[in-house]
Length: 138
View 1 (cartoon, rainbow, N blue to C red):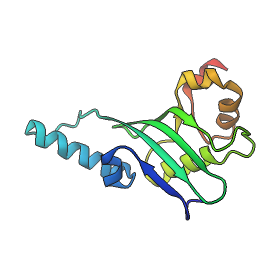
View 2: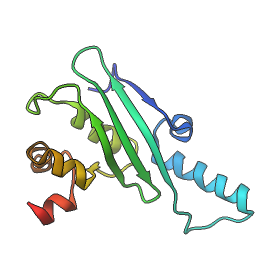
View 3: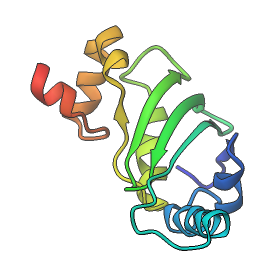
């Protein structure tokens, strides 16, 4: 699914790391060390980015993501390729992208779940996304 995929990030660190969690962590830790003169294992960083994905067939979507120092990834906003979630390949793409690049399984922000409960619960049941909020609430 990812062979002909074009992926664009708005965050320069993610661009430099080509999306890799390991490289992002290294870059963020180096940046911390250069700014403060010492390394810190408690270097808690957060990156905010828009990830735009396009292929020539089914996917043309944008995710606003919050990526954290521990590898977690939260979907803050989402513009889908299609409103029909039975034919939606966007979240499969994002989940595969996260796995391939060392990030955790994507998790939608609770307000997104509240806005489109049926949609997010469907993808949670298929284990394409994870959500503590869905586990506790629905």
